[in-house]
Length: 95
Length: 95
DNA sequence: GCGTCCAATGCTGTTTCGGTATGGCCGCCG
DNA sequence: CGGCGGCCATACCGAAACAGCATTGGACGC
Image (cartoon, rainbow over all chains, first blue to last red; front, top):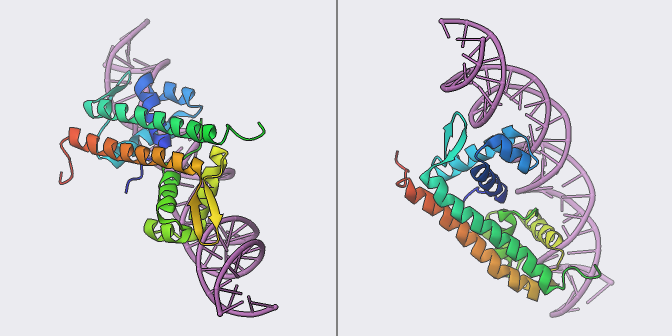
């Protein structure tokens, strides 16, 4: 199917919002190299460049902007899914 | 945040639809043990039991049914995201 | 009670992943 | 023009995660 992972999506959103790989890495409690690789991997998986590398950071390309909307929705949906299940069962028995 | 992975969601949906871990494994081109672990991991991550283990397979519990709706939506959304990006760039396949 | 069916677990080789160190690119400052 | 600094990409390595094989454990049918 695809090899996209939620981690990649989180990385992508963070970089898109921060505009810098290094800065996004801080936010995700990671270091810059693996995060840089996440973006490269994502671009490779999608077969398209998502960012334009400028000397001052990462700038979203049209494809990246389109993908960002989906990425955010996916992450929000996962969050909702988790909360829903916890809700159905009574938010963890015993607590 | 969470440790849910798209692989786990795919595994969950497959098991939910097939009703058997072994059968779902076939569908996913995996073997039964790792798939079984995916479900256990997912249940652990969510803090709730998603399936009832019957002697004839796996039956969805209420929490599982609720989660299934979200899981399907998430996977569909990822699929849409991938296709969207490919579309934006002009579906660069042949190159 | 034994065989059968299905999921769970122990163990292990392999792959993936993150971290450290380093390189390449380009503008800024002198 | 030449050295410095900011930023992302790459090389390499040790650790964690993963898939698969073999096996166990529980429940029903004969």
